[in-house]
Image 1: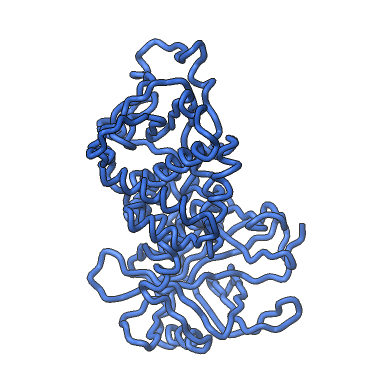
Image 2: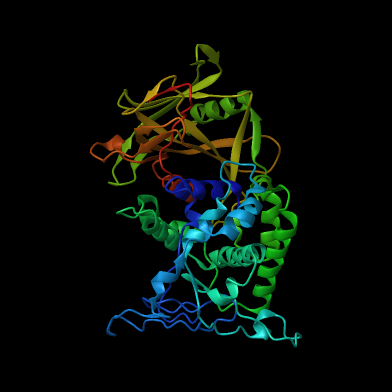
Length: 479
């Protein structure tokens, strides 16, 4: 997947929680042999697809009652793996050695929050050697743990006899398996599960309104009981990380190994590789201005505003002009973006630029046209931001009709979202928290701007789902 799409999805989900992509548990349709429906623990897709020994509920029609072992209910055996000595002494330092080159790096400890973990004195069904890919092995095996789509069960009697290093190896194996199972989860499941995990009362709007679009862009893999190859992939990655993360490694290299071994391409494709796969466009500031002027001179500037929530539309005017921007009393080359209706300005944004402008590349979707979208964020620079400020953010979306070296850019559309600064904390990332206002007037809404008879592109629809954002830094906010 293109890194820009991945970044937007990270924005959609990671800005809601620390990392929604790794904070979720799945739900599937009834009848899936790998993921049966029901309120009890699910059958594992991990290992061999057989049920572990702990009993499962059969449905809401059965009588209720406490169930457990050794005089304790199962809930008494629930643990937080990240609090275990084996995790803190051995696994946590290993995971910290995975260094991300971007702000969107994973918080690997959050993977453990996806499922309920039990360390209990339970007999677990053994995994078939053929399914494990070790049919050649004559030695008997121990079943130390079993993992379902919602739970991890560890045999306490075996676990307690292991030293802390071996215990951490077991936790690492279950972590990698959990990451492998992400590819069977839909985006809607991730969104919904994040809402439950983070205690939100309502599902996040970007997920609720755009499920079909997100599922189309990021389809999951059809679930199936894991095969010998799946289990070999999981063991390989576990061993690779064990050996290589004793010292610092790049998350990019780790992701390359994950993709090589069949992990989810939606989430683990290295950004540095994807960002160049379509040739993200780097042009001079002057070339960028020329693209804007070209749209104006040819009468191709987007000129109809479409409201995303109420569906209304209005004839509007987009203006972009070069304008120096004062940044802490220093004039910086910039661009002023204005949006007006009948000569009344409703959005006024100052943008700052370097000498070189980088536009993120996206492929055209569901079309045979040889064209690419290039986008640039609209980030309103302000020397002072405080709670209660109303700030618009969004994206300029260009289209490039050919693959030659000349820019040849056409301004296709503009996406805008209003946000209200509701909190500021210099110790937090992001420093400013913004929320969309209640839609009372037209420009309270999320707005897409394009030509009247044009069809909204997939990237335009996707950007409409992004939360509002602001250029908040330690030097320009008032707490």
